[in-house]
Length: 138
Image 1: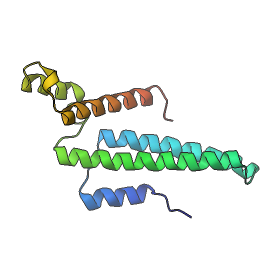
Image 2: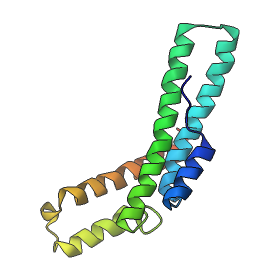
Image 3: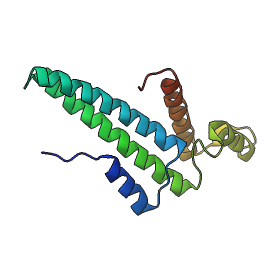
């Protein structure tokens, strides 16, 4: 049976690499928690219908989504460490775009592909925050 990552393994990877938890990484962990709650509910349902292929398929899918969310949190922490700033804790997308406006004197078409991707990542994090506030990840 495949061993899935749990919170202790996540913490060990973070510590081993000198990554720090941030508001952005916590968004991904909140998503993983939501998948864990879905998994718990499905396990309860599957216990009443052992071997049900629908439940088993959903359990596998939800476990994979939870695992991906944890890996996304680690990847986010890695990027934050490499770039030298935290996406949300150090000002967010507005500060980043103001910096780009100053850097390129208002001509954002001059942004590099990496800078454009960084901004798109800010937008993703903003969307995740809105979904959490709306109760999407409970």
